Length: 175
Image 1 (cartoon, rainbow, N blue to C red):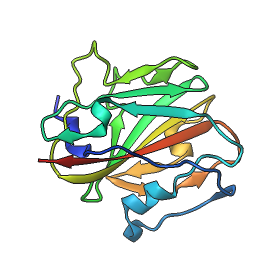
Image 2 (image 1 turned 45 degrees about the horizontal axis):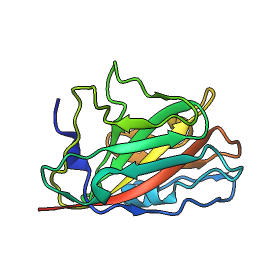
Image 3 (image 1 turned 90 degrees about the horizontal axis):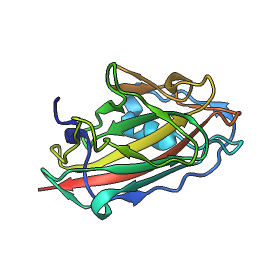
Image 4 (image 1 turned 135 degrees about the horizontal axis):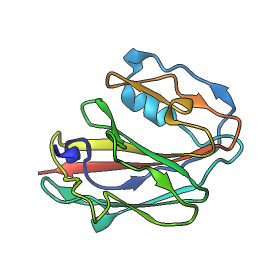
């Protein structure tokens, strides 16, 4: 499996997730993936609470293994989107068949799982990478929150219901 870490960079900076107005917003392609991800806010109704912690205090040098602990206040599906320092977006998790992304309420989930062959390493490009840890509940799916097509984020939507939640981290990879 290719190194997923090329999308992940160093220095965890927890970004405050605050409520926002209920609306649907189209983010223009030329405004960039970083702007689209930054526009993603917790649903106005509160949404699902998503807690995220990074190993090693979030300080990563190229080649360092990266792990996250994720906990959701409600059962749902986990989606991780990364936008690297070169403004390239990728669905980091799940990727392909066999990657179960179901979370149980209140249970800590390790990404990547320790018992899997999947690993995540800090790699180039150097610099800041923004990560969004999205949990969807009920029948909601990632496309109800944000659309990722051909490496571009489109149509960021802010739901009026509480069927999803988000927590964002910024990491930075150095040599």
